[in-house]
Length: 311
Image (cartoon, rainbow, N blue to C red; front, side):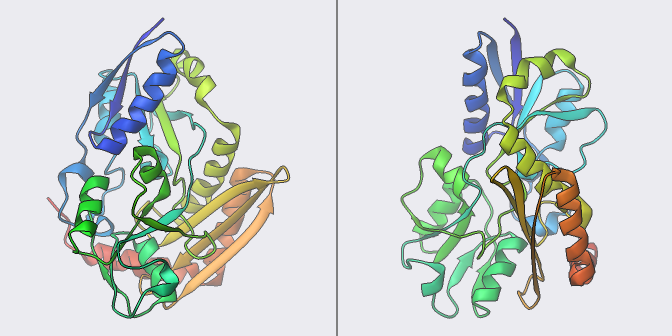
C-alpha cells in the first residue's frame, strides 16, 4: 500500500477525473488524497482561450507541485497537455478513452443543420468556430468561458442559442439533458486527445510508473499518441484551429485531421491509415502543411502574436 497525492484543478469536471483515478487506485489498496491546485487558465476567465497565449495554461502549476514533490501524480484532460512536456515529466498512463466527439447543446434547435442565420453560438475554440463557419458562415460566434455548469447556466439563461461542448465532460458529470446532437467527426473533427485523460508523473519515477501501468489503455495510448504527433508536427497547441481523431479499425490506425482558418473560408481535411502512431501523425501533418496548412497556421499565429497578452 502507498499513500498517494493527486494534483488536480478544482473544477467539478477536473475533480471527477481525479476522483475516478483515485477510486481505481484505492481498488488496488492504496490510500489516495487529492490536492487542488489553481492554474493560470483558472485565474484568467474573462479572455477567450485562443487569446491567452500561454502554453500549459491548465497544467503548469500542477507540474510545479509535482516537481517539488508536493504531489505524486497529476491527472489532466489530455487535450490540455502541451504536445511536448517540459523536461522532468512523462505520461505514465492514458486510461480508456471516453467519447471524443463534440456535442450540440440547445433549448431552441435540434441540430447544426437546423440553425438559422445569425444564431448565437457560444464557444471559445477556434477549432469549433472554424468548422461551424464552414457550414454556416453567418453564425454569430460568441466567446464562452467557465466550467461546465457555468456554460450550461449561460445557455439556460438565454445568453446563447447554442453552445458546443465536449461529449466526454457532459457524460462524466451526468449533465446530458441539453445535448441535442452528437456531432460526427466528419463534420466537426475533435481536438487532439479529446475525451482522454493523462496521468502524469516525474520522469524516471520507476515506482510510480510501475504502480500506474494497470491504468494504461493500449488503444487510447496509440490513438492519442498519433493525434498529438500530428499536432506537434503542425506546431499547434490546444487553442488553434486543428482537429485530429485517430481510431483503430481492423487492427490499424485510421487518422482524420483538419486545419481551418478561423472564419471557415479555408478548410483542409486529410486522412490516412498506418501502423506506427507517431509516423502516421507526422505524415498526415506534413501533408496538411504542404497543401496549405502552413499558410493558414502562420496567419493564425501572427494574429495571436499581435494580441496583447494578459499579465
